[in-house]
Length: 487
Image 1 (tube, rainbow, N blue to C red):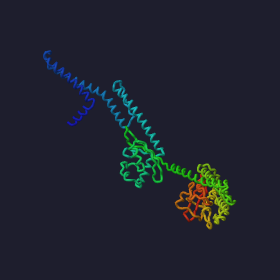
Image 2: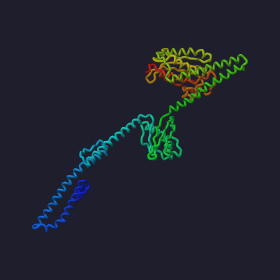
Image 3: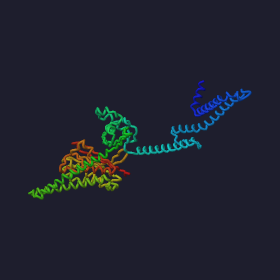
Image 4: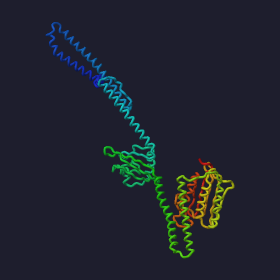
């Protein structure tokens, strides 16, 4: 009984069942009307056996029902089959197969419906293809961007990032616990937003406008630009573009420091030149001895300005990559001996012992600029002599060294001078940096560019230079020059 009920329900829910029921009802109504109006006159009009007439009428009704049923099912099949095809095609499209088409060729309304359906699926397939193309294009752009792109929803949860943004979130999540946050920030509802961006995100969500800020995380500086994502006037999230501007920040600071330093370095000798020149012009100096002293000061300051300008031009050319290097096979022991002889007289005048320790075998390197390396040693020895008091010694040495399987020539300059404070050691190769903060005029005053030039020249030789020093213990500069020719 339940099976028949299910079949009847299924038949009633189908187009065939409804159409057959409608036709049967129509036939039944017609036959009922005919029977009501005609059967009562059969006895009057027909003489004889009226029973046969009634039986014939019943048979005619049954045959009519059967023919109507056949016609109903035939017509329903013609209508239902294309509808079923359209239904299957719609199901296939809903599953993502946008290339599905309906093969119905007829000139009636169902044929027009099939053509419209095929046109719709064709347009939908083209639209989805264009959307996927744009999506892939956007994803490629995001992947290739060096900047970090992070998209947040209204609750601050990350919904989209590029690879750089994903790495940045992982890095910043590691400093989340170490970040110092106040009570307001700790109770913020945007706890899913990385702490460095939380305040900026809150500003964008509240004000609904673009915001820009520089974020300092540990030793790095990041430029963050955040814009709201709005839909019908409602802010539904924000997208942040974050760039590492640490190098730009350092360069800007270096530029400001350079302008300040170069202005100070040049202003001091210029002021002295101007003041002493005015004293000579106004005949303020009476004795010849005082006049000679002023002239000597003017001459010394002019030399100092010349050294400053030359050093600045040298380091500018080196950092711009415009310095000419004459690489050839060099025996560095000859360079050390030549520098030692050059400073021997000056060291005796200062009552400083200048010692040399060289191996018996030559210190050959296959690619080096002899003049530039002599300039390096000259700068180091000049610094050492200016900061080493009388009675102390300076030692220059050279030897072969093997570092991680590579052959190097090690050059060293050790003095017994006042040394460099430990807090200044990491910065002594920067331009205009002076461990002696007093910018006084005298034999111990330099331009602050010598060690920067030394560092650049060693880098051009693909070598390394390190310094070991502390206040009161002297200083040791160690240089490693590769023996083999660099690529």
